[in-house]
Structures are given as C-alpha cells and as structure tokens.
Image (cartoon, rainbow, N blue to C red):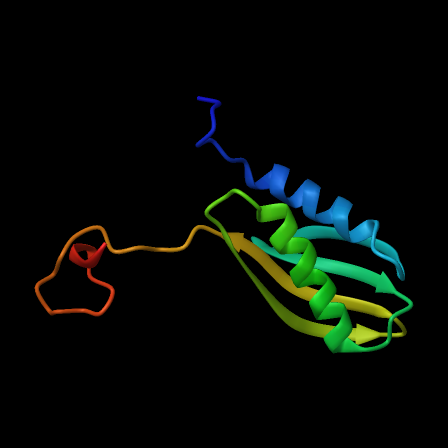
Length: 110
C-alpha cells in the first residue's frame, strides 16, 4: 500500500519532533498520547509564548509539506521554560457530494 498517496502520521510526528529539536533555544522536545490525545512537551530557553507557538507552527508546516494535512496547537500550561501543548495533525474534512442547500463550499464549484 506504500506509494505517493500513502502517509503515516507517525512519520509526520518524527519529522516534526526532529525539526523542533533542531530549533535554536529548544532544549528538549517530545510527544506522548494521554487518553488518546497527543500532547507536545517542549523545554526551551525562549520565554515568550508567541515565539514558542510560531516555532511550533513553522516546524509543523515544514513537516506536513506535500501532504494534505492540517495542524492544531492548543496551549495547556507552562512552568519554568517547560511548555505543554495539545497538538494534533489531522486530515481536513471535505464535502463529497452536493446537498442542494447552495453552500459556498459546494463540490460543484471545484
């Protein structure tokens, strides 16, 4: 089943964590699932939440390049340079048929 259309989310996560760990100021980074929800743990010398989130977004975009994926990052908590985010990669939902309600994103307009 491997081919150009095949995608493993674990490979995306590995690339994402690798890219994050290479960022300047990042001391340690890993992810784990808790109750089925993926959490990103990041230890950084950067103290600005906005800067941390831009770094996460930049690395997520680079790790998803060429794939039809989206990423969602939600701040959970921070303490002494240790940041926790709920982070996930997901396939965007798209309409597959016309329901007849004249929706702006109707399949007929593609």
